[in-house]
Length: 341
Image 1: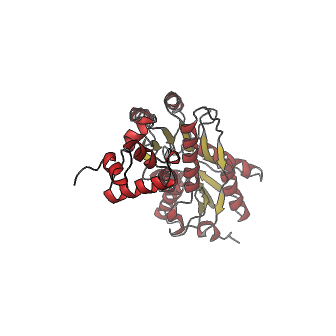
Image 2: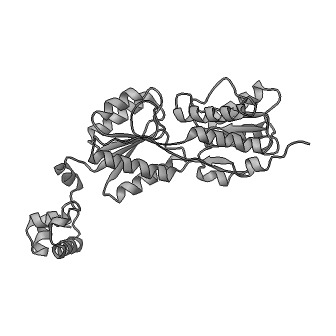
Image 3: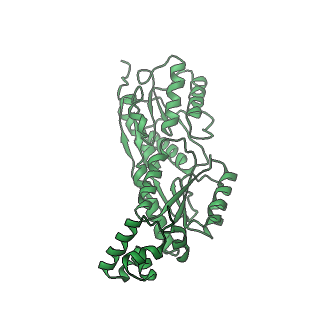
């Protein structure tokens, strides 16, 4: 198949190549008569012309690409976040380049350097941890950075997050309303602000009712199923009388807690009620379906992409941190628990 060029399109439409170029450019199409734009675009479609997006972007000092940095591609929660980002970018003619850090600081540094070398127009980081601020600030000197899901309080880096303090309080309130007094939590990584806020909100709400949260002397290294299993086993080993309810700091950790309970002959919710966080898709289909705190991943991703595009267009624009409200989603893992008479 011959390589169709802009000159071929211009010849088919009967216009000068520069006119064809403007007609096919969404940002400059208004400079050309509407009838001419229709004629040029029809010619391009008939010929199967594909414009050079890279060359077009570079003429404006852009590559029309954004980096999206995630901590763990295996975490099902991240899929709707990335979909929200990608769908918003696609409608603007932009492309996402996705990279994974696996919650490793050195890998975060390498990923940001690689994205900068590819001249992305902005980067959305969903996997920031304490200790990443230095490399993020260095990258921010070259390209706009937006934090999503996880944030770095006091960093001044724009962030679209979730009200995790309130989310932890909602989890505590739900368990209190159902009559629990021996209540534990399995804490996520202590160097991620979101998990610290969930823990703080949960503890604080229980204390208001004179209840001390039961915890083990350890936190998850990463918020994954295996760590939820490990912490649940520690909890059962360290406390003679098991709690009647457990708040796991995300759904994957809640799945691990269920597995550990089952291995020791305990059932949920009859023996121990379990609540997770994020409302990942499978929480409604596990046995039992898991009560969780919904984090609106798609909407969060869309808002992060919108913020990144605004910063691309005006680097000096002031963008503050936005925090989305949590919603508790009650299911059988807590609703099926009955207090012993």
